[in-house]
Structures are given as structure tokens and as C-alpha cells.
View 1 (tube, rainbow, N blue to C red):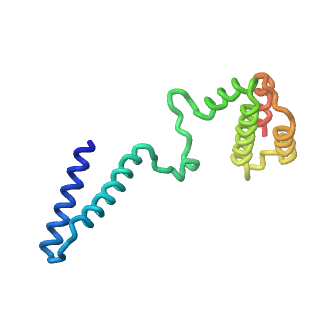
View 2 (cartoon, rainbow, N blue to C red):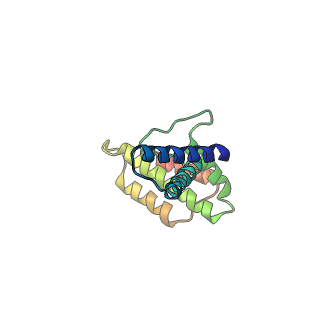
View 3 (cartoon, one colour):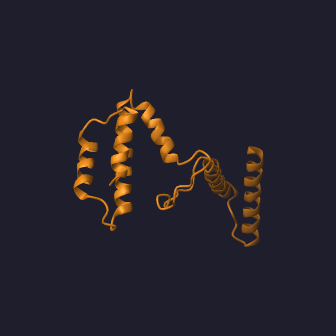
Length: 150
């Protein structure tokens, strides 16, 4: 691949010199070679780095979640977090973040329908934020049931 790139740069230099001579510009071949080498190096670097960079997706949060064969990826993440919550403080904090996000989503879904009770929602948010989270699956299930009942 490198030989092909060098050959392409040399060809670009020859073409640049030929065009400048035909146009009567009296080019300086070493200066034109330096410009060609600098441009080629920049282009090569960008081409090499393009394999590591993904195009940003700015509207990903607006798209609906696509459920694959394994189901909702949020539930898979929650399951992994629940398994790690017994040993890791960071996992407990992540679990708290996930549960608050679920609570916010439920409140957003029910906004305007008159269904959620603001007092119960505030109490639940306070308990999620300030009280220690249970790591027992049954207690977490009861907590999720309280969130769903809003």
C-alpha cells in the first residue's frame, strides 16, 4: 500500500510540474515536491485515521430502540449492572442512574394523561436518590413495580 501511495505522490508531483511548465509559471521542482509531500502526508494520515473514527449520530436518542434477537439492550445492560451491584459501588451508582432514567421515562410517558401522582413520584425519586439501593432481586423487583405503578 505504501508503494502505491508513493507512486501516486510522485505522479502528482510530475503532473504538477508539467502543468506549471505548460502554463509558463517556471515552477521550482523542490518547492513543488515539498508541497506535494506535505499534502500527501496529510491525506495519508487522514485516510489511516478514518478507519478508527465513526460518524457521530446526533439523533440517536430520538430514534426508537430497536429490539434484536436478544431483546431490549437497556434490559441487558440493567441485568449486567444488577449482577455487578453486589460487589461494586460503581455498579450501584450506575444502577441508581438507570432506575432514575426509567422513572423519568415513565413520568414523561404519562405526562398530560393525569395518571402519575406527583407526590408519589417525588417520594420515589427521593428514595432512589438518598436511600441505599437494595441489591436483592426481589426488592429491586418491588422497586420497579413501584415505578411502573406511577
